[in-house]
Length: 194
Image 1 (cartoon, one colour):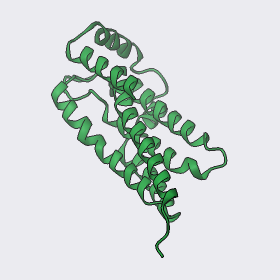
Image 2: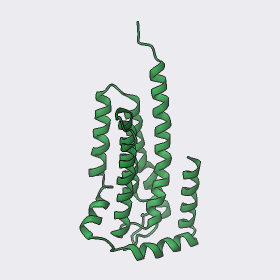
Image 3: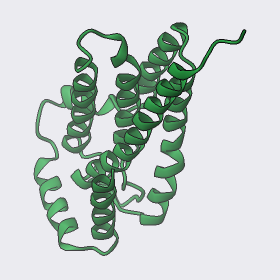
Image 4: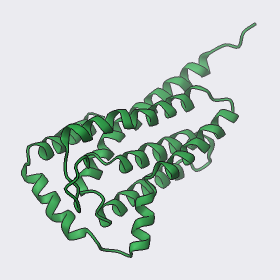
């Protein structure tokens, strides 16, 4: 978790201070914009829309609730609720312009953050119920990376906007994982009422 926090802090500092990493980021971003089939890259970028990602997490929460789990779904919902509470003030404070616009508020990427937390939390919720538990986190990583690729190729975000969101939300997901394990451990030791 400290590694993700450190990378997020470094990335944020470089964006705010107009450091060399920001200049490289903007050169790379300009070179990538417009590559790939427009329909596919738009589809990938849309994976980070709340209308797409939240129902995925919602279905996972309902499925786990139906199996009697209460704490982990609550923690997952709180992690998702924390995304705009963290991202929006940062966007306003940093006020980074986007790749194809002078409008500000592009760092960190809200779409990348939404995808990371929604798909990551869904994977953490569902993995314990699967024989091949590794499949859900792999699917979450693929969906999250695909979203980031779409956002950059469509010119909606710079690469560091996406990477910064992944680091920030990685911290949230690690906290979710730790709290989920504690909840499972505490629940396993509880005795039914007599």
